[in-house]
Amino acid sequence: MDHYSRAIHGAQSTQKARADYVHYGNGEIMNVPLTPIRCLYRAMDLFARKVGIVSGTRTFTYGQFGERALKLASALARGGVAKGDRVALLSFNNHQLLESYYGVPLAGGIVMPLNVRLSIQELAPILNHSEAGVLMFENDFIPIVEQLKKACGSIERYITLDEKVGAAGMTYEELLDEGSPDYIDYMDVDENSVAELFYTSGSTGAPKGVMLTHRTLYLHAMSVATLVGDPKDLIDLHTIPLFHANGWGRPQSSTMLGSKQVMVRRFEPAGVFRLIEEHRATEMSLVPTMANALLNAPDRAQFDLSSLRRVMVGGAAASPELVARLEEAFRCEIISGYGLTETCPVLTTARAKGAIDESGDRERHRRRAMAGWAVPGVEVRVVDVNMQTVPRDSKTIGEVVARGDHLMAGYFKDPAATAMTIENHWIHTGDMAVWDEEGYIQIVDRKKEIIISGGENISSIEVEKAIGAHPAVYECAVVAAPDETWGEVPAAAVVLKPGMGLTAGELTEFLSATLGRFKLPKIIEFYEDHLPKTGTGKIRKLVIKEKFWAGKEKRVQG
Image (cartoon, rainbow, N blue to C red; front, side, top):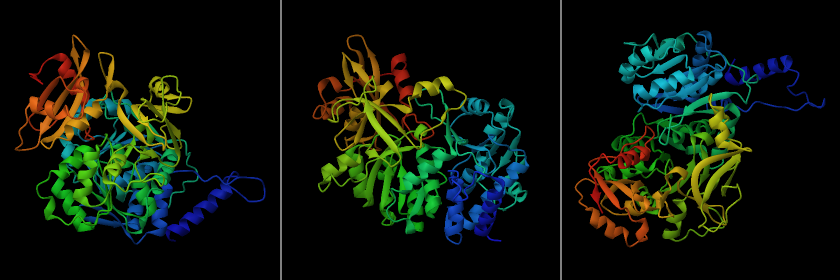
């Protein structure tokens, strides 16, 4: 019996067992659970013979991929994973991690990918807070796993995704051998139960566990799928780690559409270029730091990147200059997007809108660098402190709030933080923005990162974009530093491109052409090679800010 026949048989069995499954004519309503499992089953039914997943030297059709997910599910269930149990993964991008996105929920568990850049001191509290019972890991992390075994009492099973060495009790392939590829009916899934648990980056405080339900994930996949023009030959390059919001926001819609998904195990410019050329990748997602690395890679011209049709930029605000440079380098559509882990993640994208004339380069780059307008399934507003919508004048600053189909169920074991974030069904993002009459949103800063200098509000993002426009600047961050006269003043941390020179005075003179005097950084520090970042590639502005306030570093006065 093939998968489709098993699905029909399973549905028929469920119809007999459940009176609430529809029999037309008797007044009952068909209610098929909304779950990402349906994305997998659709791919297995319609694209079984199509190559779906490429991971290193391994290639799987969607039929093969789906059977592996089913075997994982049954093996986990037989091994004691029950409904609601957390299964953690410490892994770079690979097919096993992607299989877990379906296999763990199929077993009734909650999949929990971990940030691979966290230290033992950061990972242990997350695992203890989540009370994960299973940890699957790549052997690269054996030194950390050995320490986790001592620090995390809830973990009962350690499974390596590679060969059995050190901390592993068994290998992933041995686990799959214990499972069965038999169809698992999803009709008994509670669509409001949690399927995935992601801990926030902690860039502005302690990490919190974001609970995403089956319903939330399925409706997000449907929403993202509507943004794809022609999916039949789409080849999706997973450049962003799947523990990152911009990473796991794509696989379910790509699976639903039957797209070929190429895993980038670890981001490295030459490796990304090789995969684009080899697989003729059509789409990829980047955070600005990744985009910057690709643009400045010396060997980019050696590769054929002509297959690219679209590059999505998210995770942090982009600048029109960045969009222009990406457009020139890759000769394809560049679109910014915006969202949070708490919103599953995509809220808005800066895709073209019929009412907007983007025929001129300058206007197109400006528009495409914005957060954009709401995707289907969500409402987005910019509001004041009284939850009143601010004028759509591109000037009045307010907080971005959202409600809709694919928002989190709350923070795991933290009702107080949940109540502070969700108010009357609206989620407070903590991001400050302006918007216009077409609903285009432009993020100006995080609520906690607005610099208040002498009573004036200064957007750190605006100053960062101005600094980033200098041809010698590789990356930068602007934060508030203490000042006896003004209370706070802008302070900039800057990394220069290799071989480039720039003084604080020269940078200040450059900025004077575009920024008001009160917005100019009063402190400029040059870092040797890179700024501190989270595992998701975001600059850790809190770390930089704390150093300024502590006064521990030597400063270069501008």
